[in-house]
Image: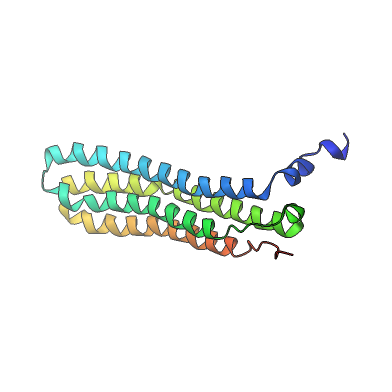
Length: 174
């Protein structure tokens, strides 16, 4: 196999702006997918458990809010990544610095998006919180603490994504 048909050569020929756009789209899209999945799990359990104990409905909405925060993490990082884009002359489009900036934004978007997709665990914990609270109201705060620790994983993803995006420096215009 010649080096002209290798994957490495193909990746170098794709515009860094394409990688940046895909990273930004993954950051927001997959984060919203994780939030929607978590809200679906929490909401369906909350509605079902509220039949037995209607008192749990209002205080268990905090679980839905935690799931919604996951989507907001993706939106915030997508805005940060969007501000990292700069125009470069077409002669410098495929310079090493341009490629590194595009890959950094792409990697940052992937990290944040998939870290927030994993946060469907917040929805699962929220579901457990609603069902447990319907049975025994003293368990609500205990499970809520676990849910807070689960949502902290999203903040770790955001922090790593911001650190990765700091590597996105485009070449200076000539």
